[in-house]
Length: 415
Image (cartoon, rainbow, N blue to C red; front, side, top):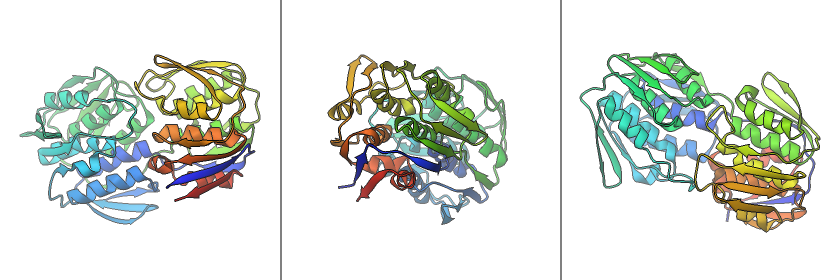
């Protein structure tokens, strides 16, 4: 069984550099399907989700060479347009190949997606807007089968600023005939990074970083070289680890502005930071409970909610964490209570009474970010914590155990 053994409580010290963002590279990898020339991506993280996407691309006929430091993708000889269930079922981001396949090859057959069990996350926004661009879509046998005689630019308004829908529709629009306007777009930095990547490959997108994207369709994308942004969610996890362990650590390799809301919330709780151009340094701080509501960017990210609950169990006072994005994202709570945390669930809110001593116990990972929360709790718990099913962590954290060990944690990975 894949697991981690963590002995606490511990103090951390030193510097940790976060990897390139998984949530940026997954849609960028889908975007290579749009390019007729080779695309070289730098410092691609070694993650389970990334490997799944690479397998999916390989099955479609993409030739992949090089290693993670410099990986080249050649999509000039795509030989079929079906993304099969055996790969798509494990990762929701696989749906992002729908737009690129449809717009470049005029047909796509993509299995309905899977991923972490944190909510239903329907894809109707993707499909309804692709139809408005000129796609004919049939749902049959668990697959989305889309065809077109050629997508045509139009004006679109997303009913919700969905990250995945924004990315899928944006990629479909870059090769559509004419101009496309997409309003109420997601503002997440990973969406901005995708748009910057597409422009680097020859797309014509303006309004990047705003709620309205304007796309002038082009005949083709060529190729080129690109490196994604640093992973803000990984950075937040290490920052919270530094605060929970009352340690002085430096977290580098990302843009602190991408975590502005999180950093400001932590400052309101009493956290002391030193912020540089590409990182954050934490200092021992006396924290008090604070309330948090998850929201689309630039609000508090749902992907940091579980880690924040772990922090709230440790600091003094009460905190209320309200989850507004996904309806089933508190599966870490029963595991934290096994360690002695005082958490009450009420609807979509978790009420945490902090300051309780956590005790090491066997706990089980249920999804990616929940797993990170259990590791954080284990760092401050008395005694040994056995974190089971850590393969969930491998979806989004590159070498997490090794990075924490370098910071001084007593942590051992057992596969």
